Image (spheres, rainbow, N blue to C red):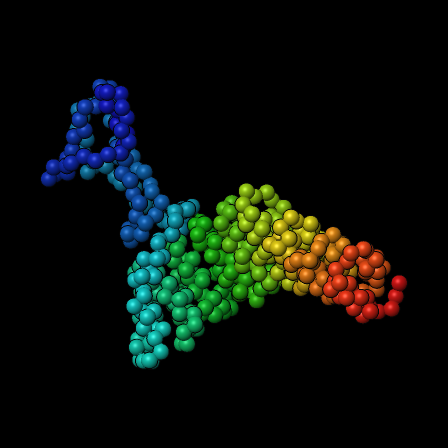
Length: 391
């Protein structure tokens, strides 16, 4: 607790030695000062580290007063599922070190019996009622994704762990479920994680959800869960959700939210807005006019490799036929304004991909520019020659 001493100093925390009965004395307290004693709890009944809870045991305003702490009730640690636990997860490096012998046996290629025994150890850990064993089983199972064994047989062992009282176990279970194979009924379970009280668990919710619907986020309830995660108060949750959207079909609502995020200001060049471009907008499988126009805006960015170049690359897929002329016109502008380089190469590739009769005049104008690169001239002439007859 905090203690006011006679010299005017305030001590926060500190230690004191008890006698064999557990009694202790605080010395040199300032006369008349209040003393508050707390119990700091940072583990639940299973010994799992949780966010610290400060429980007041006693407030004493009369120095010298004897207080029987043993008679005071201590509140039980709250259920971690019911609380907004934002504590960091258990150090998985320690867990990986603990399961390394299992993995070494599973990955060796000389003795199938030893490999089968290691796999059985993982199954037993997944079926255990001990949280630390469950965690070890999940970490080992995800690490064994490339090992040949019946992973689907572990599905029913993993599903109950999605409802674990321990947040990092719920998160690991969601990852493991993808490896075991998503089945009917799993989507509803995974959607529940989108509203989990723990931010680490929410971070791991999106990828399994996207996998469960074969990357098609145009329908409920998956689109609603993903939209909820994209509006999460924690940037880490939003960022992990964006990462999961690679190559997905997006609902109009998700697409609009991604575009909104892409326009945010960030002090980091690779912050949340850039993640929206790199993982979502550029890889979107069903780009609408809004997405296409947002990607075209990026073409004027000063980072011609990572931003403008990425946008030009992204416009090579997922563009509807009715948007292709818009893209081709944008690429003509790039080729007219940029010299050779990654962005110019991508722009030329997109022009070859989408140019139609509508771009004939623009190509002719570009060819008339003085000093045009010889290679570019050759490429443009070839594109012009391949265009269908028209205006």
